[in-house]
Length: 49
Image 1 (tube, rainbow, N blue to C red):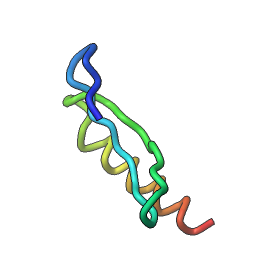
Image 2: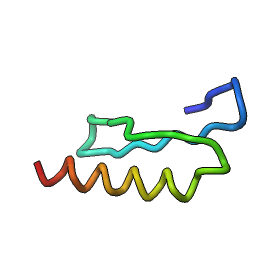
Image 3: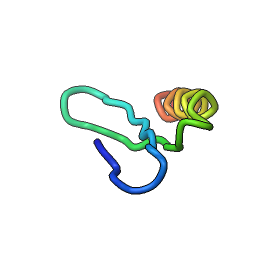
Image 4: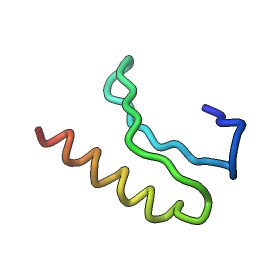
């Protein structure tokens, strides 16, 4: 996915099986590490439900 406005946004998602894609969170380069940690945490919470 490419977002062509703003400061080079990163979008984080997870794939579950062959069809399901879920947008978890996003951000720009300045918050990349924090955003990845948040996405991983959210995905683990979703998978445990």
